[in-house]
Amino acid sequence: MDLGFSAFIIGIPSWFKEKHGDLVANFDFLQFTLVDCPGHASLMKTIIGGASIIDFMMLVVDSQKLIQT
Image (cartoon, rainbow, N blue to C red):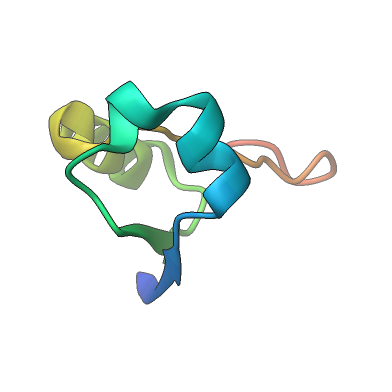
């Protein structure tokens, strides 16, 4: 069971700064970190447990495999 990590950084688009300037006034870039985690329940609990440092999360589950125990 291996975890895969990848990250990329993008500049905040000018239209977003105009619309939400108060939210991003101190930021020039957004960092996206992707974590590929096997679907075993014990690993999912660990990943979600560390979510306190995450601003946004999207969980994708394989509809044929579902969460494995």
